[in-house]
Image (cartoon, rainbow, N blue to C red; front, top):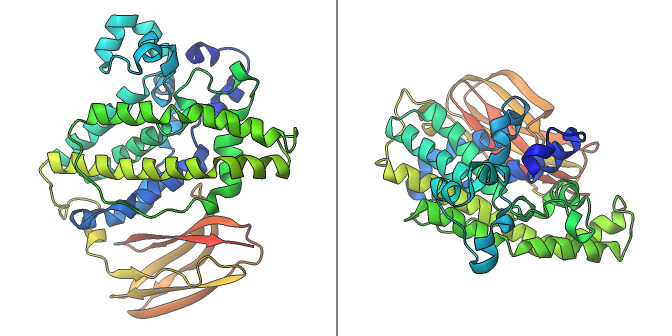
Length: 370
């Protein structure tokens, strides 16, 4: 179904449709995973910005790897077992044995791609390959996020079956881009995952119930305006869906943290060594404070402390990782530093303060409001 459609006319449109949560949502979900880091995961604090920056690597691979496409969705309601009893064969071999390889790959292999990314992450931990580990963790976060986007787990992925044509991009991209600053949540306590395969399928089964909720949100918003590009439609779509959308974001970030924690624990809880890229970050020579005020309107103050003389690159980046402003690109001396960021011409939304030195990569989320 979807797989063949990519080779027909309209390939570009369909490719855009199947970018779950867009770059904005993936950046948010991966970066917010650190909200649930426990004390044992303190050495992973330096991963926050890297997870966010590489959150959409898996989508980028679609440009040159056709095998990547089916990893981002599963049309689970095309499985007769799911319609009859709410589950499907939960191993890839089992699904292929029951339905054939063509059917399985045509309907997407999202849950098995998620487990494969987890297994690769665990292997990286076992051999202390921290460079690759953070990239596999980023991919894992992408697939986890896909599993928390309801329209990536249904054959009615763009509302064609229910007169909701185009809802996919309206919900996951346009709405999220407009209201990302309102998706705020705190971390939760995490637990080890006893069965990773079951864990992944459980949240996919659970999130399927939100397919109808998204479609109902679209129907509701159209009672305010049939112009789906209008501010009236967008506001109504958000107002109807913001409760479950925020919960899906929160659950995705939390699930990513639990899976990273479990992979690291099963690998023997290795410490980041001097040969690992993140060791110097764990022994930070910089403290980056949260800006104040935050949220802010026209300006906000950024403060950081250096424990040694070093070259500092301080930038403001948007949710796609693009540099908006470079505030400092110079050698700075030991001590406290402060800079006022004037943002009158900056659109409202979520941005990131990124501070880099030879030994550090630190990130803080900031929110610009009207």
